[in-house]
Image (cartoon, rainbow, N blue to C red; front, side, top):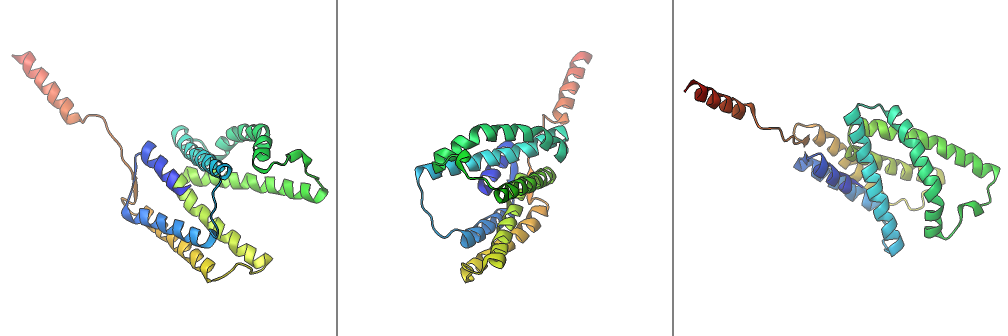
Length: 223
């Protein structure tokens, strides 16, 4: 997600990152990879799902920032306009994608009171998550949101070890967490410095050339 988000900002917003900002992002990626990636296997379905998920999410987050900046929209306004469309598309496409990937039908699940309770609670939490996403992306950028989002990954791992036992917790995982957090701190410091992350603006021809043309035309009239 982070490399793709950086690519979109460089191509469409002409953003330029300093060396420290690039290195801090790389450190975050290394830390998260160390503490989460344990086994790597690739198949066609998983690869296609990953590519579609990464690019669609990156484009959605970039477009959120673009719309808020272009139209001066608040987080609630933009969320209220986009949430119905997202919900409708998921209701129409989601069951078919689930069946394609898992070969299980959504409607065949045996729903109970407990499962419905957790389903409703998950949806409620998702509203807060989407709102925080829109607020963060509107205030900062998609790349900053992704860097901050990796803190969520670290917290999920920590809470999992606290509530569900310390199985899987070892020096390897702890080292990855520390590296990721250090990268986040470094990114916050590097990106906030002058030149850490700036947008290149290509302005129109300068007024100096315009003044020279006016001067030449004036001299011609006098002659």
